[in-house]
Image (tube, helix red, strand yellow):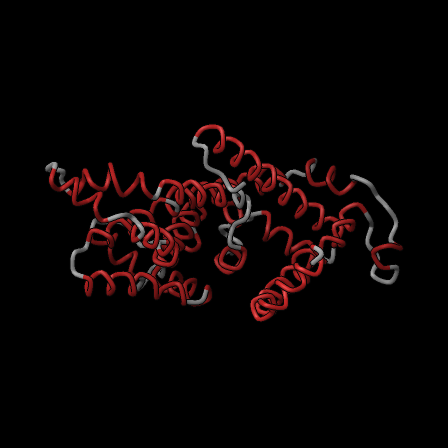
Length: 304
């Protein structure tokens, strides 16, 4: 039997699996690979009546326009600052939650805590932002009620530029911490129980077991998740930022994704917004490659 016939025989034998795989593959091709054709708009003065191929070339004009603009540094810095803030608080939070849940001896309590923290993931962004607006109200908001106990004056935190990042980050951590902890809980569940039994015989405390057994055993998972997070460093939640944004906090909330939306969709500057989006994607790509390379050299663990 030739190699080609053998391959087709194997495909026919598992045709149900390949058919199941075809739908997500088609989704990725249609929505992630086909749009790559439109990247050339970043180098053209796009005219809808002429189409992508018929529009005149402008080279790197849009890139120069963005980097020479007065708002370039502010938009990039806001994106980096918000992403680093989110990663600094949001990345370790699910790990700590997973370790906490793993240490709960009662399975019923463990499942209850996991379900409660996981359910917030199903709340829509609109609901979360609405909650933040209510909690930030100067008259009856929860935040002002709490800080008022310590003598603080009422403040509309949603209209305060300095409060934008903390509100975004901590509400994001609260919403997605339980969902992001699932992969770490699964990794902890795969640890051989005999490790803990041997540590108990040697007189190790629960904290020592966490430090010397739990964390080292899930370190590969942590590193992989960290590399993926680095690869999305310049990608910040667009919908939530846009909903939280107002004329007062724009100086702290204007990020690349909202800037692209305003210029591309609202103002119709398709080539200019595509160029900015391409810059964002290239930076993410470079960061992903760099993080994976460093990780492979230092920890011998990587995505490839």
